[in-house]
Figure 1: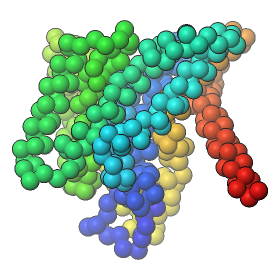
Figure 2: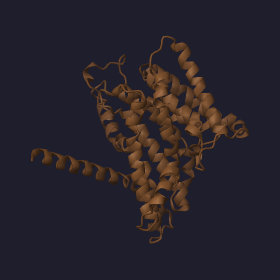
Figure 3: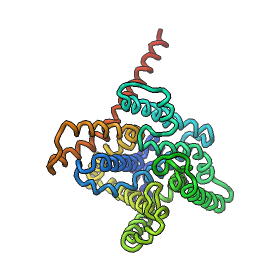
Figure 4: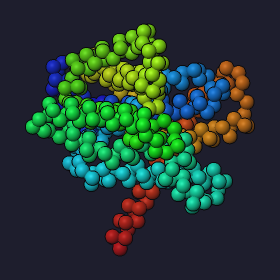
Length: 381
């Protein structure tokens, strides 16, 4: 996580790199996206492979994944509008093809595999518009709705108003009310979790919080704010487990629900978020002295694979279930019985389900290079 001018860093001015300093990529943001997406893969591996992998009981530890990713998507959308200065319907539709086109291609790939090499166009259209070709695609159903209203959220939370002290609280209260109403009183499609609700139910609140974070990011990325919020959410989560869990059970949808998330997952998600930001902040301090810089260098190397997964999180999300399908076929041919076999298979399954989708990133990159080469040749002739 190199800063633009390390020589001027002091304990007073040390802050996270801005989007402009990293050409639109923020290291901790990509890292947390990668953590969220790897958690999604682990969750689905535990569900699909069950006793074929070790420590399948860790599945509940991954329940923060979708909530965290929606929150980070809100931050990303706000930063994108900042960078392109097009926070309107045009900006929303500018971002849509980056989601819709890969989703449409992935739907075709899944259907082609499910039909044994055949292609049924009517079945494709049904799968495309009902988001049914793969269970996790429920996420696309409500995420596209969130993208459509993202310009309104940007206007409410990120544009400066003369009466910000009225507009921001009123807008957030409206978001909470709409999210709660949607969560308990709407059913759009017969999909899993947030996919069945308008705007994803409570996921709308997480998305809006991403815009709110972006508005106050200069303050929220400062060391005192990170220390305060990490120091608040970590004890709150511990207290929730020790004393309030039974109360959460009494109102499951509001308390212990995972998808859409209740209050318990809210605390869990933001404990991980602020705890991770605190870790990044502390690592930044090791850049101040030459004797501790090897620590930050090692940290940068270690987080690189997770950061890379975050950069390509959409592809991992779209194709990891296809990789899990390959693993299920593989299990019909090999024996995984002993603890050692299960341990090695678990490691292989996680790496394969995460890395396999990146092959489609390479194919897309090769396709772009081919089109660019042909365009250049045509212009030259």
